[in-house]
Length: 151
Image (cartoon, rainbow, N blue to C red; front, side, top):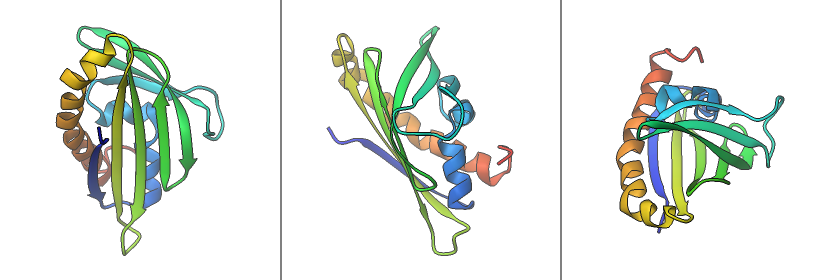
């Protein structure tokens, strides 16, 4: 199946949009179900580095480990899930708009099921992501444009 793709235009520079959208410590501010996150290690992000996110799934909090697959600030960032029954592949693209004070953010997400995840992905996960992504990106946009992020 094709990835779920969601795009929004934001009245902030590409650098600000990219920094906020790819910072796992900020994911809980705009992503439904995320309760925490951070990169494994310190220093600049590099391909192969682990991104650790905690999501509330049902009544439990579950850790999710992803690996950075590509990183070219402030333009593109991607991660691929490496554990659990449902593994997401996420690609973030930020494009400058004509005046460079605005940016277009596109997030593509796809899922691969392992074990029981092979049943859950097509029955529930893709539909939930398709419903949540537009609201998540609108929250991200509002946070950046309203200055509630500290960015």
